Length: 177
Image (tube, rainbow, N blue to C red; front, side):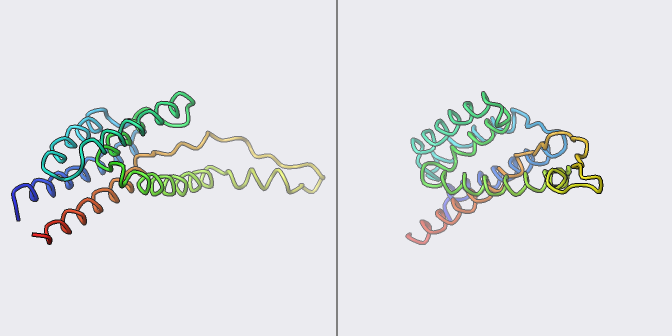
């Protein structure tokens, strides 16, 4: 094994550790500290210079996802911390892994959102709109708070995909020697 290979694996482990930290923090406080996203972004150039991925591809993917994320944030569809974390992770994904990463994050986030909607009584409210009570009126339970999903947990699924994919690519290139 080369020292670059060891550095690349160490950086991928750091990426996962930071993503786990972001998810735990988001689950506890619904906030993602900027230092986590910055640390993920700062590790990318080192990883790219060590031969882990293409630098330009990562910058393109990160910039594109950041631009889309800023649009989503301006519409209140996504939180600012989620946008920054997703853009930082997209640097590591590059153009070759960004689309499957987004699909994984979207599916995971959708499952989490459905579970939260169900937990806060969304299903009961839906049924109450369509099932009459004994007096013929429709029962409408009191509205609860809007579902809030700590999306860094879904982004963690994408980080796991990127880290494992990059490791598989690295091990494949190692066998070429």
